[in-house]
Image (cartoon, rainbow, N blue to C red; front, side, top):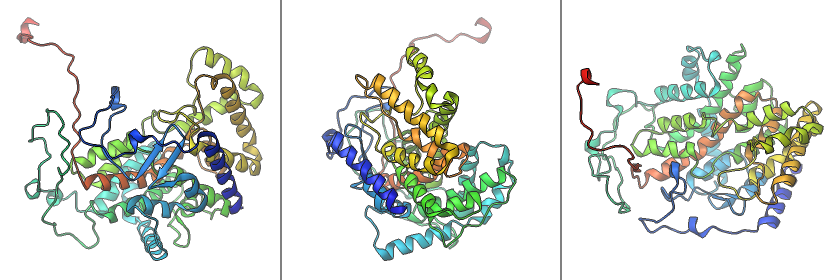
Length: 457
């Protein structure tokens, strides 16, 4: 069955390459000469903020690249642990490197003190992303010395200058070395990390699934399960959620889903993480800001909305009648379209066939898949002659998770436990040549207004 998943992915890859080729957007793949000229829209749309070798989203060709590797190939041949290592370190691990990395992840999954603190809060009444962000902050408190009074970075020990004491309201000059280098290391317990080195990234990647699974079980009146050191990352997450070891096909599909969500360019949550890190805050706060951004309905949670839509339609024979008034009213169809892709989202190309295969094995969800398939065909036939609108990653991912027995309120946290690999990889990369983010705003207010006393207003 694992080979069957591989064949489905390679068939999707073949379709993508036949339809769109391998066009490279040179404007986004050549080393920039700072300062750069670009067209910027509201919300910094189109702005070039930094350089990165972590990942590349080719919106024209519908391709997603991690460190030079096509995501189709990684999903077909790799697993999440290997991909996380790749994103963090820039190369695929050797056998010994993979073993050492996997052993660290297995060790760092165990966070009993964090879970004990988490259970002291009424998390069963919290939404899942609020609980995850709280758990991340508690993890920081347990694992680091950063909450101590002397745990903050000391600006006096920094070499170079990038803080707001430097005049920033000027034309950008593109300095290459505006970097903080701390010359003194604070003493700390051997059990604590600095919240700034690679072990902190490992801790976050390993522990976030444990926190999410614990929240799920506590919410449902069950005690959290200890991680199983015999299981891989994806399988262990499913085990901690449901209390039973997943089948090979469930483990493989979960691995693929985590790989597909691991990184996706300069999206809102990644940008939020980088902005916080650029102030020389620590990786835990940076990831916490990524979680906070992902909590917003314009970024995370779209796959839940897709499921609600499909259930609202009710049956695949109802699709045409449901869609007509939506299009007539120019309403958004959940799960279609993407800010970047002008071609079929490569992640949806993979998740679609996986959803179909899983639905065949879960008859209770087959009608839901048929409704999704019918809606895709109907939207395509009505809109793609001029608008080129395709399903995005959220369209089929909810059906995949549903077939894996995962509740919809966990879909956005699953996004986070995967994307933490990309957040940490891009954050550590950016800090090598750190420049605090400081865009400007155009002032549209008034001038020369005269102050009047309160009695005269």
